[in-house]
Amino acid sequence: MNKSILAAGTVAILTAVVLTGCSSGSSDDSSGPVTITYSNFISNGGNEENLQAIVDAFQKENPDITVEVTTSAYSDYFTKLQTDLAAGTQSDVFDLDGGSFANIQANGVLAPLDGVDASKYRTSVLDSYNVDGSQYGLPTSFSNVVLFYNKDLFDAAGIEAPTSDWTWADEQAAAEKLTDTAAGVWGDYQPISYNEYYKTVQQAGGSFLSDDGKTAAFDSDAGAAAADWLAGKSGTVMPSAADGAGTPDFDTNLFKDGKLAMWHTGIWMIGLVGDLPFNWDIAVEPGDTQKASATFSNAVVVSNDSKHKEAAQKWAEYLSSSEEMVQVRLDSGWELPAISDDALLAPYLEKTPPANRQAVFDSLEDIAVAPQLGANSQQIQDAVNNSLGEIAAGRATTDDAIPTLSDEVDALLQ
Image (cartoon, rainbow, N blue to C red; front, side, top):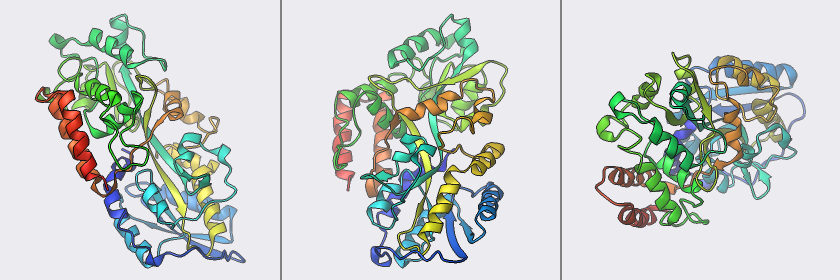
């Protein structure tokens, strides 16, 4: 799984960053050989050698620049970053993710990146790190959520496979026809959770938070529709909690056993599912009034205090867009780079299953923007999960639960 899916849990730490160690920036001293430091979490847990291969290739092309790498586990990384930012000892270049970027950038510790060739990147992912027309980060990788489906079940039922034009209504109709509880076959599976809810609110044309991020905005027709969409599947076209839904690996095993027709999950499951004794594929997730795909990304940024900004940006661009980086990532199965050149991505796109890997990149055309929840992020997510769970279990109605949840979220927002 992409580590940035956990990013919301880091927000409480990052909002406490002390700014006394930050300055308005330093002059770039890039005459002669320079050494830049790079702190990362992206390579931790098995990709350290892959990162080193990219470093080696960069240093071969840029013999006057040495990159010193520090790698930390994701669980420790942001605590260390907070300490470094407070002391002014942060690396020249360091990792952030989509959930932590906004708070860090707002504190003025990032250098704007000049002269970036935006054409090298997937626009929607690159724009996630653009503020008021200035680029403050470059995406190094992404993962997103798509619709997996069992082609054999669709064929047996005489139903056309999902397409990029599908809506919720199309998905619901297919799920009802494909569900056969007597045979233990379910038509659909989508986690009833915060991460799915904020996305489906956007698919229904609404927003989880107000434009200024200070109040909840889901006590609306779109918010009610999203809650009904998720909770209404439980026990009808989707297993309920009583059936085991939500327990570890339940949905994975159900799909692998050929008992699940459609499955909303991340592209990180492609490698884990692999070859199966039936045909399967993926498609862009259906939306209601619009498309909105959950996307998680990591990025590199340059410290505003760096004395070697030019060299630091050169490394950041290489790490995020070079052909050598792409080759290393694709060869090793490391998370996908957010580059725009489909020719470089051909080895990934041509690999099967699934046949329609293009859906991974098509999903980036309409990204569901993750709300910035502030210091009480985890409490807000827990409140959403609990409220949706009560609706799914039939212990609460959407009309009652969503307004109550909205008030609870308002009180938690900071």
